[in-house]
Image (cartoon, rainbow, N blue to C red):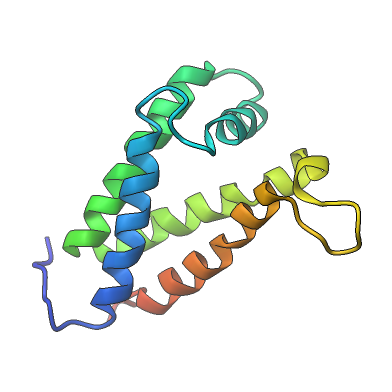
Length: 136
């Protein structure tokens, strides 16, 4: 396990992304606390063909996000954490395929609030890619 290095590469970005993951994940542990809960449940329902009960899917997502946040905040298993984060980020874009009416507004290229929530993940992807540590 790699020790935390406060002077290491991009630690501020890593900690910031970790805090976002931790916070957003923690909200999902409390029923109806997360503004993304319904979207997450519906998306996971589609991705798993309805095989995972909604409440269980949110708890598992909360565990994933909080765990990922802790790994990033403390700089533990950074390489693996970034990969898990990127996998998560790919899944966050699946509502574009499943629920386009919830993502796009009426005007060309306009986004709903849900669409903006999803598109902000491009910044998280860029941050994760920038802190990815390649094996030497």
